[in-house]
Length: 536
Ligand code: 6LW
Image (cartoon, rainbow, N blue to C red):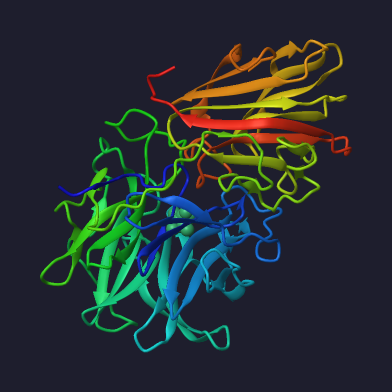
């Protein structure tokens, strides 16, 4: 019996996967949007076990997302390898203007996947989802998706290809349209060459519950491309009962032994698996793997013989390579932030945080407010399951209601639940909750005054599907008391958030000081663990 891959392999917000094999190592790159550092790369040697390895775009010179809106920033990276060099191409969406996205595309390279990666080379702004194809003769091409106009509230677009000169670091020749969408809208294109055919592999029908994956082929790189009669060759659109919804946006990899797999994005709905419609996805879009097979007449299909993505998939015949399990708790004893933490839009320097000024604590200096798209002092990680608990312990002594620090669950600058310590003119130092739902901020709720002698304050969030309950303690971590009502966690989802809808939810810690004095908060630990949904 073969070992099984359990999907999603990359749980929580990890969309638009691009997969590559380099000898015995496999890498998947996924989109990070407004989160910094840019692009996540996970590593595996058996396709079963995956570990977050690196974020290639980690300096301001490489990526400066100040001011970009929710779900803009990095879209759909494509990771490839040729002649001892890693190539990563991606879009940095930096504005959305009268129904048009501004989509400059860039390329960075590295000889070691852990970096250093080069400074970005500007490619073009034709569209998004650029992908790099290395032809057998050494020439390289970028294929991307260009939206034409908005017709009947539906995007249309075409796929274009253009040559890229590695020596000159510029696009050369003219862009050529290789696919024009009439009924089927294609994006996320990749090209592969096999047995004399060029295969165009692309996502169809948008990234929601109607999503699918299509394959086309041609004897010539520039087309015309013929569509497979079995398209969508994978989709969940007619099967609302499947756990893996939104399946599409695939990329292919061949193992050392000639087996084929597709990495693709998917989503797990909160509830109500038998009907589509108003289902919500708080975890965003995730990454799954399917085993593939080539038909005798040279088309590609799922190895399960259907068009439906599986949760359990036969693993390739490779030695198992598990990674050490990460501890749920980060005690902030190191001198670097854990790789799972991300910040918003820019890297955090010593004016935002310190792990050394007070040993064993993460000191966050209060910076801009939660609505800011510039310099927030916030570190957060992805939700990975529908039931989890997150907690922290902090010391913070605010003198103004403009100074806050605490535990936050957030989707973007307009949608969050924030349990925090602040100052109240009647109560003095206190705890309260602020809720923002599409920028409608509630009045703070659940005010609790803190005893004067309190130093450490424990804060906790428990999420169970659409339910969120905060708790706090001033007497140790076994003495939590709930605070505030049960809140609606489903507002932090791709479907409910109105400014952005591509990311997924995060949980983390942050500190604001709107007086400008950068009042610090000291966090002793941050803990996140996934629970059995029925468990406590
Ligand atoms: C991705 C594109 C898409 O680049 O969503 O709806 C974008 N289509 O393929 C972000 O994931």
